[in-house]
Image 1 (spheres, rainbow, N blue to C red):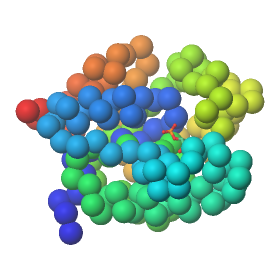
Image 2 (cartoon, rainbow, N blue to C red):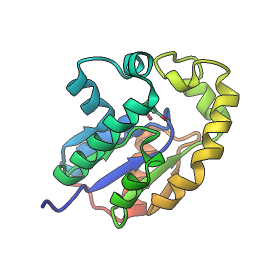
Image 3 (cartoon, helix red, strand yellow):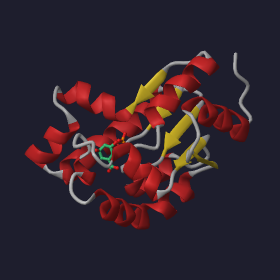
Image 4 (cartoon, rainbow, N blue to C red):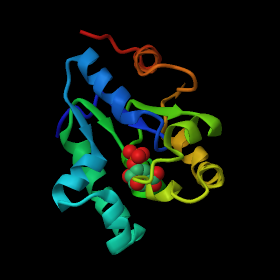
Length: 172
Ligand code: S3P
C-alpha cells in the first residue's frame, strides 16, 4: 500500500494531461507517469495499432489494468488516457483521490488535436466526434474530479499553476 498519487489528471485527449503532468511533476519534485505510455511500453506497439489490430474493447481492458497498477504503485503525478473514466471500476478506484479534470471547449480541441491522426477516435470529422465523445463523457470526468481546471487559452504553465492552486498543493 502506498500513499497514492499526488495528483491524477483526467480529461479528453489534447487537454494537455501529459504536458501539464510533466510540469506538475517538476514543480512537486515528484515522478510523472502516464497510463498510455505504460500500455505502449508493455505491448511494444502504439495505441493506434492496438485499436486497429485488436479493437477498442481490448485496449480498454489493457487500460483498466494499467490504471489499477499505476494508482496502486505511483506516488507522483499520474495522467490517465482520455477514455479511462469510461470504466466504472476505474471511476470507483479514483474515489477520494486528488483528481483534476482538465477541461477544454470544442474549438480548442479541434485546434489542438483535430488534425492529429495518431488519435484514432478523432481521425474522421473531428469536431462532430469530439462533441459526441464529450456528450458521453463530460459527466464522468466531472464525477471523478475533485477539481475542474479549464485549459482554454491558457499555457501549460498556467494550467499547472491552476491545478496546484485548486488542489492546494505546495511546490518544492
Ligand atoms: C483515448 C485517449 C488517448 C488514448 C486512446 C483513447 C480516448 O489518450 O488512450 O487513443 O478514448 O479518449 P490521451 O487522452 O492521452 O490522448
